[in-house]
Amino acid sequence: MLASGSRHAGAAQAWYLRVVEGDEIRASRARIARAAAAARRTHERSLHDGVQQDLIAAAVRVQLARELVTSDPAGAIALLDELRSALHEALDRARDLADEIYPSVLDVRGLSDSLRHAVRVEGLTAGVEVEAVGRYSEAIEAAVYFCCRSLLADGATAVALRDDGRSLRLEIDGIEANDEARDIAEAVGGSLTAEPGRVTATFPRDRG
Image (cartoon, rainbow, N blue to C red; front, side):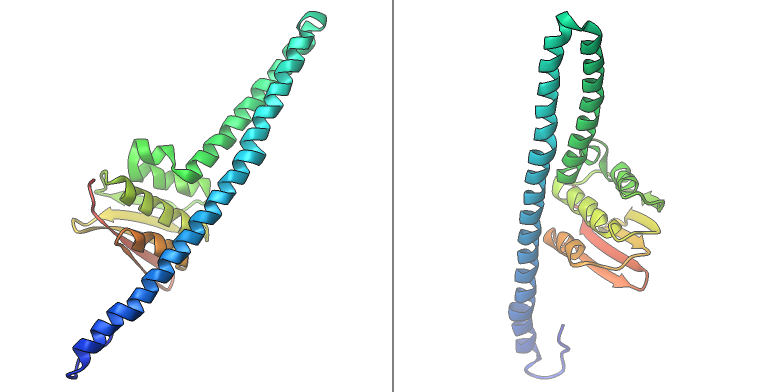
């Protein structure tokens, strides 16, 4: 922000808010729109190349098993066993895709368990400390979760989330900030700051 100290400071500051911060907001929104479009294309490919192909392969196995029931019962049973294993794998892939869109653990169990889940999904051993955190609006919980996921993609040594009575404060050690995480926080009225070795994101305490 511009420092005050002259009779033109107020006007200059108003100009800054209107033009400079306006440009930053527009740029942030444009990045969010591009990220959303890219994510949508990725999910569409995953549905087509993953889930759809799994279902087609399952349908083929079912048809083959039907043809073998009379002539080769043992072969039909073996094929059905293969199908059961393949369907379990397909279900795991479908769950992973659903988690990328909106994780069920966040919806059912809230931020505490979902952040621990995010650390496991990223294959990290970072400790997770959660203090005085309850349930909040869907938009806030999703922002906290996906901001954390974005930052965890770069690695982390520790994750902490606390409700200080004024805001939700997410602190992640061992990483640097990125534009995606900043945009996610700012989209719901939060903010993101960085210092060497730590990123801090704050979010409104919207209980929904």
